[in-house]
Image 1 (cartoon, rainbow, N blue to C red):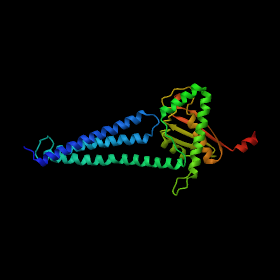
Image 2: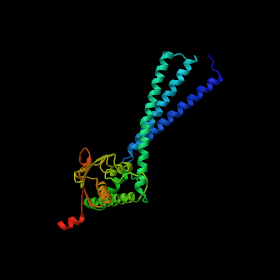
Image 3: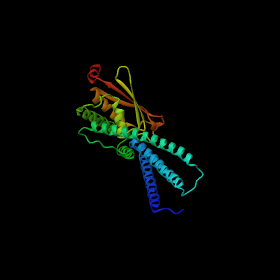
Image 4: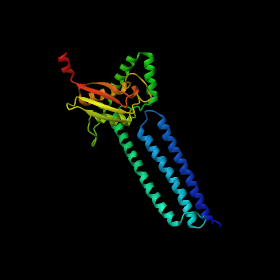
Length: 280
């Protein structure tokens, strides 16, 4: 059967669309792989690129399917599928494509929330999202220049100053509808900054002691050590809670992925410095 010029143009246009969508799917997949290879980057963003690659890949398949159906409908080709079966499969494809949009919307929404959180928390400060590999290189150089104990003290102090500064700036931002200043916010902010993948906070009945369970710490992933290695994060949490509560805070990492534990667990204790002096 001879194809008309309008049919030929329609087929060519659909083929170009298929090629373009396949290219976009490959691009999103490569972006996902690059982010996964880079330690310490925001995991939500890598997951978003993954779902974009799946969606565009599936959408490419949809276009191929509809092209085959269109060609059979107008008698240009003959396949083993009946038009009735084509209709059933087409309905299933439409349903699947609609369901694929859900995770994309969820991840996009969470990323926007994290960006807004960073914007509020930063205040007049300039936040730097540091790559995990660069962070490990800094720690290694500090250990070479000084000893391991000095490296710990330096990174702990830097983390404490950074955590305290960020939440002081957070306090100064007056914005309607801004979230309450609560200790659990520390985990959300660390996740948003890409310093950890996931964090869970628990506190005792007195509200003076906190346990932070951390997964995906950029200080511990891919590191082997006989001692805990999350120096900066420990200091950061101590500084954040000091700023949030107005009490002195000290942090100790009790479990760490670097020494073979399933997660990192940092214990933070609050104390009134004046009471401590009286006791002394």
